View 1 (spheres, rainbow, N blue to C red):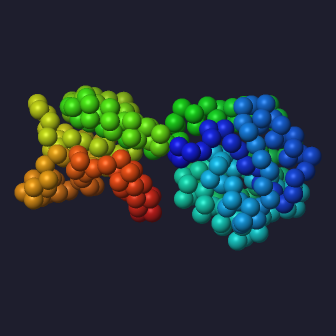
View 2 (cartoon, rainbow, N blue to C red):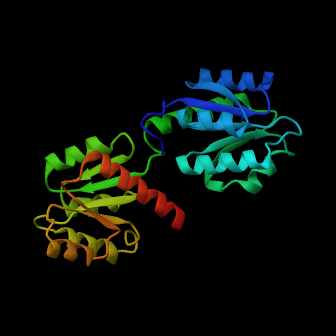
View 3 (cartoon, one colour):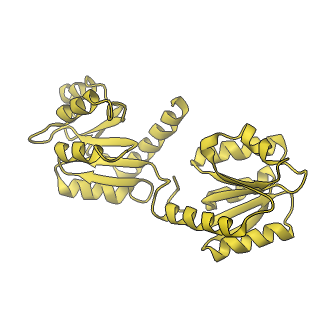
Length: 260
């Protein structure tokens, strides 16, 4: 979920103004391993600070709610960054958030008075999950070449949660117990080829909807057309460089999110 340049523990508290209660919660967050900063809920202030955070905590004092344009900007910005937020408020303010925010974007809501122990535990758990890569998109890379597997993992590991399989059958076995957001599948493998693996994936209801992109070392037109004919989500030539691969994957996930 999180960009590699984001510290794995920085949390933004945002509200109309910094209060005694926000300072108490910020201290609780810091005691739980976070670094925290208060940012007023204006478009400019949020825009300047969001890239450095892993989590936003929206603090609504009694009778206060962010302006509609600010809340809309915050939701759009979190969506672009694939981030979540927590909300703190009373029975009067929390419905404002629940009615307007996508449910999968809300990590947790806290009603005032806040249970400080539960708040601290929630922050600790969130940081642990972020550090473990649980909020990152997951990619399974399948290739019989261990050197190429290691190279792709090194390129992608900061931004994505990477699992490697050195054969099609190993990949099928792993997918029997695990979920993944995308498979990068070598087209030319011995024993069980990429097309055969794709056929097995599509014939099983549990894996039929997993997006697959082929990796191929053959760039002649006939080979490329043979890959395209299998109707994968896309394909990459193995000569692709790191920055282009990262860019194309990001484009895919943005597009996939918009159409999901």
